[in-house]
Length: 258
Ligand SMILES: Nc1ncnc2c1ncn2[C@@H]1O[C@H](COP(=O)(O)OP(=O)(O)OP(=O)(O)O)[C@@H](O)[C@H]1O
Ligand SMILES: [Mg+2]
Image (tube, rainbow, N blue to C red):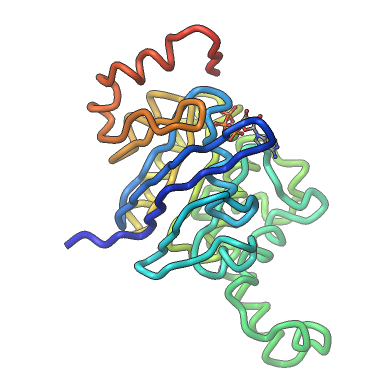
């Protein structure tokens, strides 16, 4: 039987007079690449912000790995197993690529603050492990050679891959990617597609926001389509592409897609 990784029901979120999300739900099974698409301003990032504890929803219930969870704090959500990347890259610009990944890894370490302050033997051993694992992850996303460079000096595409490495460092049950291909050229997109495929093959589950239709349709097992905060379609890429409401939302007046 298939195992449900994330099940979200009835999420609503209002900003003043704007209903950004209305009764949105998704169900993602282990090993899936699940797509979240929709025109600009549809509510995709808001949905990510809700499930990762950045925004408090007005309504909604959440289960991760079969257990209820409350996405109330970003750090707690990461500990419980959801990692993400950001549409507007959020790395520590003055830290090296390696250090950025090591920060992600600290979600899973045990020595804590006391160990860090007194640099106990256990802490030092753990740091060495974390650095080794961080190098492996940089290699995995294809930027090992950039380990010692400050993240702000990396190209846009490499920064996006670094964010994925940092997210993987938390050993997530679910990795949520918010427009990972934005700003990438065609060659970089091919490499990204291979990377996402590899992450899936290595047993992770992926939630993907992406505007590049070719990438989305080629990668996703299932998709949800949002429009003005409402879920207008759910299904396989083939089903979604044939859906009249989806065609209307993308072609209709007043929407700009990039
Ligand atoms: N913190 C906020 N305060 C007020 N309004 C917000 C906030 N965050 C998002 N919104 C609004 O909610 C709506 C949904 O925004 P969201 O960023 O979720 O869209 P999106 O689907 O990710 O779009 P894009 O494809 O452009 O990234 C937009 O109208 C946006 O202006
Ligand atoms: Mg967005």
